Length: 108
Image 1: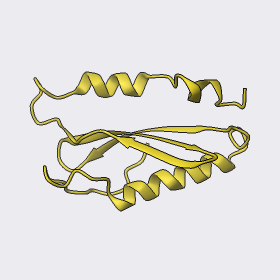
Image 2: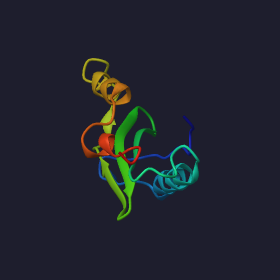
Image 3: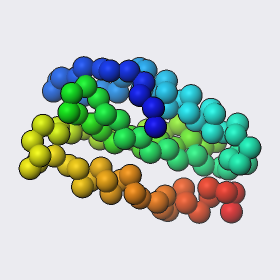
Image 4: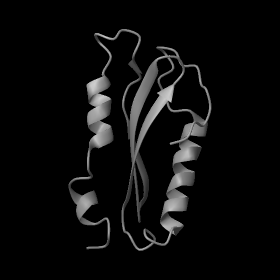
């Protein structure tokens, strides 16, 4: 896990930052060229992005022969311990790939 940059966000600015997209694309390039994964047809990536002060989002990316696809959640607030979506982030972090991505990870 690495920290790319500290980015301040607002309730009206919910989009993905350019440096975040660049980091995901760079990781996809490294993964597709890395020997254990270079023959895989699909490269799924899960990003738990902590942005600014007490905010985070979940980004799911997949790279296949058609190119990259990204899905991302809203920005979630972690200011209030009672309403912070900690359990959801933990479930995503502990999850395993499922569906088409899981069955084709190693070209099966």
